[in-house]
Length: 281
Image (spheres, helix red, strand yellow):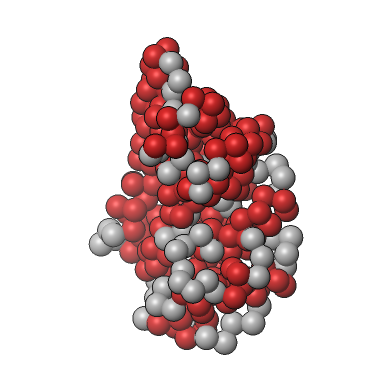
């Protein structure tokens, strides 16, 4: 019921935040999805969430390319507007690699590795989605609203991770200078990614691109440690998810409040930093 109401509201969305949400939940019509995201970005060009989401959406293999993706290089636009963020540079490197342009890929990898952080801003996006779902009219209890918002949130970020996971694969990865650059970028992403998904993607990149046996051993150790940390932090979320399904209405309500507080902390600090502040348990 809530999903139907939100989709009906999306049809008449005119505010940037609501247009962005409309683009996130639209899956049946790719052109409409891009149009919603592009309009939100046009109205608020300094909102990095809008810039990044549109850039990532335009990486999908559309044929033909939607006008908003064709009129400018959205990935380069993101990289230019967000110069503290290394993620768009890594995605530009993956695109250059796909075109067998090794030198351009190396340049982007080296650029990305020097940037202070890596973020797709989808922790911030989770708050935007929650605000819309929470405000929907109707009698649905908070636990049901949380489950719907969480389901939408799961669709975010996949394209960015696929781009990083495609780096340093295939025949082009045999170039030693590219492997060294991939390894360095992977270590940087593993150390400074805002989310566990990004850090794990960086650790995997560092592992597969390790240029020496010693570097491989260190990368494998880092990946194992990072998986353990991410699982420990996820355990608290698993407890909340289980409580949302409880037959006890009071327990469901408390779980909804805890979920809301959790995504707020993630949005403010980044998922990894928020976990470190509260401890994995």
